[in-house]
Image 1 (cartoon, rainbow, N blue to C red):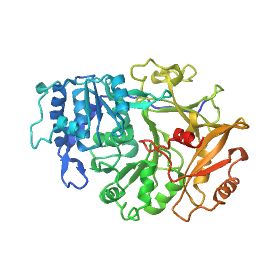
Image 2: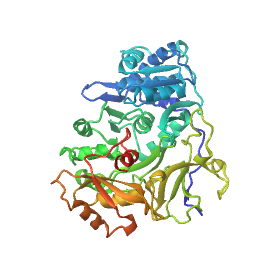
Image 3: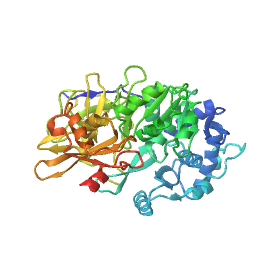
Image 4: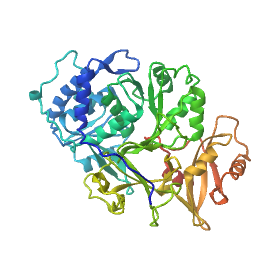
Amino acid sequence: MSATHRPPTSNATPHFVEVVAATVERFGHRPLLSAHGSGAALTYADVWGWAGASAQRLAGVGATPGERVVVRAPKSVEMLIAYLAALRLGAVWTPVAPTATTTELNQVIDDAEPRVVIDGNRALCDMVGAAPAGAPEPQPGDWPNPTPGPDQIAAMLYTSGTTGRPKGVPITGAALSANAHALVDAWRFTEHDVLVHALPIHHAHGLFVAVGCVLASGSSMRWIDRFDATEVIDGLRKATMFMGVPTHFVRLLEDSGFDRATCASVRLLISGSAPLPAVTFQHIADRTGLEVVERYGMTETLMLASNPIDGIRKPGSVGLPLPGVEVRLGSFDDADRPGRATEVGMVEVRGPSVFEHYWGRPPDPADRASAADDDHAEGPAQQPWFRTGDLGRFDADGYLHLVGRSKDLIISGGLNVYPAEVEAVLEGQPGVAEVAVIGLPDDHWGQQVTAIVVPDTGPAPSDEFCEQLVASARERLSAYKLPRQVHLTDALPRNTMGKVDKAALRRSFG
């Protein structure tokens, strides 16, 4: 029997543009966002009208329903308006990182075959135009304004595959709606919430999680174009929520202003996109009195799990499957599926926000697991399972713990070593700020466990520091899990999502 968590059945879900339109109708007079330092707030009606005028401009340059609109530009209010304009038009919003090279941008263009490309902030501002001061909302007859079906693609994000070339992940309007509604319910968003938004919006965390929750609930945002600890702390004094990646929380902890007084009105701190070390979780709780809510998702699936608002929030766990989401552990080595909840397996999922296949590519059997062995046969149960590539385990309370990516699994002397387990032990040692554990080739063991350590800001590590680090870990780790090499470095390489780039570490230290 597999460790499986099943959702209730759900009714048909509308396209996300209908969700936003309903929010605007209900809360049009309320503030949607205020940019840091500007003082002025834009209401829902302001933003929706601006997006309507911008949709006219997009239509004028050839954007039509179903056509891709590729955008490379820094985060800005105008970027958000352009996204909403594409939604209103029924076009497919396709952002790339503002730091993407011309080669990377061209790879996306070659694959997506967009009708419109907006490259750079100036081009974006020209397309969006200025906020219409008191301008009337465009009428449906003024520009193509179809009501997209729920299964129509609303956005496409690109993620690198095993080939290294970007692969497009089509995301339907219904998937965006299901994702937003599940999170609004799980995190109890209301129109009275104020979110400090300091995330990029070219990926799912900043756009579909953070902005999605706001647009579905009628809440508001303190908008910060680029993460800055001082600006975030200033925003938190009048906010109820903050979403960030672990690196953001580390930077906040470095500022003495991140404390209980600053967070007096804050009810939720939410972390995602990368694992939050348990020691960082505890430091945040000590400083602010708030326990961080860790959650789990990926571009291909949107959000899958979250620690609960009520009940225990477990450090090192991504919590419980969200309503509407099924999670189980499957085989990752062609063996039988794990039968006990404490066993490690490949995280397999299905639900209303899980994508079907990559853009322009047929479904890959390696990405899916059969539903033939399900022990129930009702509706959604027949949907194949998506194999995430993440390894995890369930604890006795049903909480999901991720232990690493399958590609990062270390096999030393024929035994499996899960990097997250070793990292959790080393991160708790004195003098350690951050650590990443990788496997490097070894003629005798096949792979050797190697730790890359960033020392904290205290005294410079002595020659015995690395030896003491391993010696201290012996009490909690079996011998085969202990690092055979420890390298010190000033910083760990990270991608735009804040995740440690272990491939880069293997290249540097291998």
